[in-house]
Length: 490
Image (cartoon, rainbow, N blue to C red; front, top):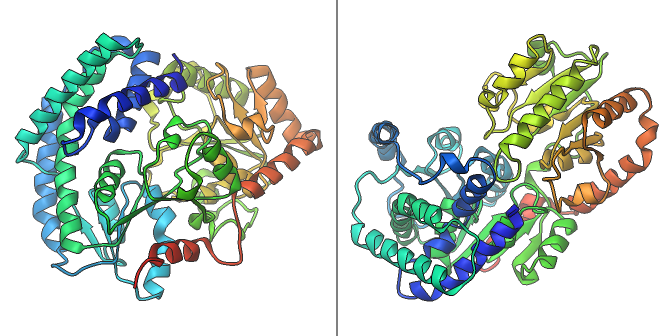
């Protein structure tokens, strides 16, 4: 089964389960769809033998408990905002959510609109607490909702038993139950935490960072149960080739441009719940291109504008790239890099990637000249646009960075050795130099340096694609989003 088939089966399971939870706080199969999907894909494609069941690591749980005790004691008392009501509530959980929403925060601030930012990620809270009204939400340590948890688990067993009896299936149902059994407690505790927040601060608009992941899913499910509330979200990365992006449940889903709108409507999303806003995080970058390598990168990495600079931005192994495929991708990159001594090669790691994935290739190529930078290294610029400036090209798989590079007129090479990157529209529309083996990658690099005009038609297609992908209107994206958030206010 590929990931599209797996997701189709999971949607069928969700629909089968719905009637069982009519009188419950939520349908776990629906609310946990992202976790079930990603873990099931990994189980079936990559590491079945390592995941016969999902088990909690007791030592890891103890460390987390101690951390949250410290967080709660130190920070929770600093972030109390009394009983004041806030018209707009934001729920970011990733650094990219803050990057995406900062211009929206500032727009609302300039309009003197009260809003509250709630996060259960301490680094995010520390980053924004001085500038915006913010609350840090520590994890629930005790379990005051045992009855609800046990009831949901019993129903989960019943659903899976009946699904197994009545329908043809290919999903690993025992493994799926082990995910539900292990993780459902966190979802229930979040449900009641968020319910208290909504009652206390009485927002009219709730904007989540991503409505397919844990916090966003739970919060938007709660919002759907209230008649006087409306939920919002903006697209996270590229929506094409990602099955989860057909399963949004917010009332209003903001999109960067027409390409995403067309793709989601084609895949069944109701057009009335979609709105093209443009990308607020691009306001400071898209139309201020320098074309020069950043001074920090020059100083710390020794980069120079006199030699070609290739930026490598893969997303690491996961539900769209198998571990086997990623290992092969790295091997090909290091092999080709060894043939071009004059090129400056830089790998900017994705948050979910780490050097453990590089152990074999680093042993194979001990004299490599590729610079590898962790996404958590605070000595380097955070914005990917800073890294893109001055690049000769970028090398990636199906990462959203490909589209961002196109917007800056930077050639994109996509590398797929095992035909895993299916239904990725910028690849299908020939907006990238797509290669499938070492020889093709070597040719692409050679031509981009010495015969760039070889790819004129592809580069023109990339320019057309990015214009269709990123909407630019007379009004800023952050302003359009703010108008929509406040539209129903008196």
